Image (cartoon, rainbow, N blue to C red):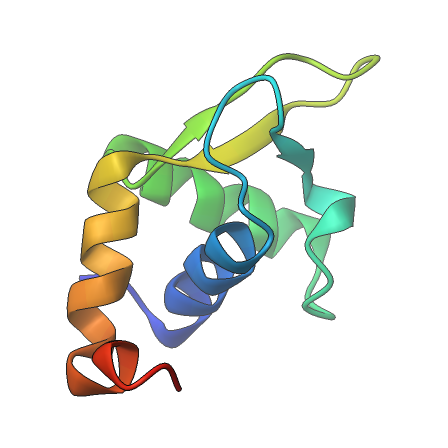
Length: 86
């Protein structure tokens, strides 16, 4: 079950419109104020769940983007709030 941090990661990827491997972003571009080790761990779990996927490598860093499954999960987790545009 995704955590609040996982939902926040999905929020950032969705709001920044990171929907493909070409536009994927590095962990350092997800400004959540948490350690890189925690971000790596959470992104690994999100990838395993199919909510996020690895994009193209930028220099020596992995990049990530939200998948269609992740987009649907994010929208469903917001429920009525998403429909109202909050």
